[in-house]
Image (tube, rainbow over all chains, first blue to last red; front, side):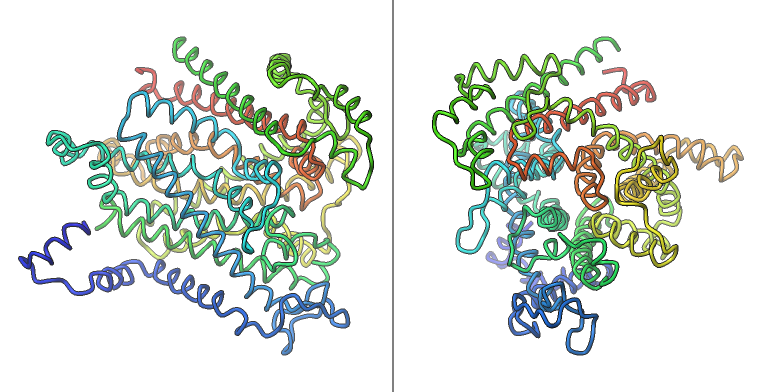
Length: 303
Length: 317
């Protein structure tokens, strides 16, 4: 689709449509109000995460032992935790690991998954069968268990402030899932007449995949990235909750919920209420966006 | 049918063998030595000689192919080896904890189906209206809320309304049956709620598809009541894909229990897994991965058989 638009513009046979992005966005907002709200929420989270040091009222790491477990007040809008740290500041800073890890792992995983899925669908036959068997094997291990095993095997390795092994642990288990989704999408493209035409013209496999299949797989891929970002954020939060994800003292939402005793959260519910709300609303926004994108981009459900 | 059965069993064994091989080699390529870790992790000191003795005891001194053959031969006999940390047979460690996890999983599965029915049906029937949007928000929320947080919320809500929460210490069924059940119901409902969101969305879309079929129109045309059309003609067919997906979801369900068991302090398989990780007990970890994989493929197998029995179209190929 993109290719044809640029061609038309360059040859000048079409009155160049200015800003097709803006037009698409306008249509998305009007037909998918829930998706638009999700998009707005995600944008504000990005802004909050980017300007965390400016926006957070306190240092997220500064402990104050004379102000532990204080209820929400005008000084601490979301109260303080058992170290006297400001919960709001920690949540604002926690946006960074959540979004960075969630989006990067979903992107990397979906690219690898798309590569495997498209190859599988394009070549079919034995290649497909072999890749599908490998997928079956990997899918038989629950996601979180697979992630935990990767963490246990690789341990921690922090490079430039990013826990590389944690990223691998979150990405790897999703690759077979993503490969499966992309395979079914690619299969429907694979049987299109224009692929047959391209083959009849004698184009190489690489060219057909790159020029004819992949551009038509962008919409399902986009839907998948959004939906899986929700899942990777949730997985990161779960791993952090279990104590094997983001390491202390980095403020991360899952970590804020971990090691909170029943006594603590029943007497000081704000300690768990707000971080959980942060996880839920972020995951919710990405899921809803994925949903809306699916409806907007899937030709079968578009009215 | 028999050929189908044999083919599926063959696939099942092959998958398990691949998982066994994968976990074996994954845990053998580790830089650290699990036996050494056991003795030195808490600041302990071990001489090279003692370490070698211990390695012999755990069978880590043998060449890798021999260890591999031993592992596979053990699996055939349902022997998963010995836990490095507790030094008990792994099958025994699992055996004492599997019951409670299975009970939780089945209860959660039941919750997941029962709660999904009204949501899925209402969503399909009110497609495009505000009710559909509301249900959509509800089901997306169900998939967005982390189970460990939902568990905390439920505990808070119970405390606020009843002034009571299920006991955190382990209760045996024989001693206090009601408390035992109460302890399981809350975590199962938490995990089940998430599952019901997935199921409800699936049910909605498959019901919408079925409602557009000719036989539904025929049923309406010959004067079948609307309730009966939905219940007998549409739902019976729409449930099939939902049931199939349960097989796939079961793995996720067990994964969800890993986290939930931590919150509710339930001594099940999830707890054991976290212990294996914190003690770096790779032998135990390996055994647990095998167990999860086994449960997954067996459930998938059962669902396939059920599907083939229920849907005559499957038997053709």
